[in-house]
Each structure stands twice: as structure tokens, then as C-alpha cells.
Length: 150
Image 1 (tube, rainbow, N blue to C red):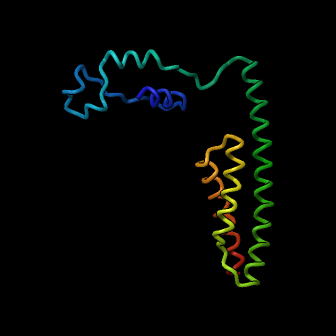
Image 2 (cartoon, one colour):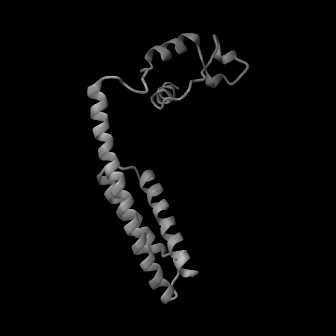
Image 3 (cartoon, helix red, strand yellow):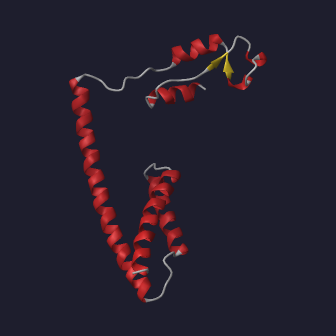
């Protein structure tokens, strides 16, 4: 429960709802969701209360520089995705001209395995890699589908 409460604070949620009862085992609602008032006080004292922002100029300047770097990388990612879709369009043309299906399961599996290996080396979770490449793959399929049906 403490981890969930801390995560809520770290993500700037609007509040927490924690059930407290002097005798959780005899509470009318779900006893497993209850904490004693003493435990609640311990939790609230242990939470690292965070601020949405800081006023120090050094912090603001450093954060702005880092965000500029992220913006630059995001711009590059979008450019690369655009280039990738142009290649997907060409692949769609080849598939259309050769009467080949859009989805190539073996190729998709190769892409994922390659991405997992690279992602693992960079500390990226497989869940993230899967979601990212699923989105890219669906966009590629949509591009190729338009070409196939034109």
C-alpha cells in the first residue's frame, strides 16, 4: 500500500483514499484494504511529499536544457518514423505487384526479437518495446493496406 501511495504522490494525483479502522479484521468493509490509524500515520509520515515544480533558477535552467534534448530526439524520432513509413509504402507496392499478403508473421517476429535484444541492452522493458513496435507495425500495415486497396 505504501508503494501505491508513494507512486500516486510521485505522479501528482489529486489525492489518496486509504481506508483506516481501529480493528481492520472486524471492519464491515474489506478488511484486507484497511490499515490501523497508527499504520496510516506511519505511512503518511513516510511518504516523500513532492512539489509539482521548483523555483530555483539552476533547476529550471537544467530542466529546460534536458527538455530541449528530449524535444530534439522526439523530432528525430518523428522524422525517422516518416522515413520508415515511406519504406513501408514501397514494400506495400512490391507486395501488391506480386500479390503477397501484407502481414508477414515471420518478419514481424524477427523485428520483435531484434528489438528485444537491442532494448534489453539499453535497459528498455519488453513491455515498452512491444507497445512501441505494435504501434509502428499497425501504422505500417495501415499504409500498406491503403496501397493494396488503391
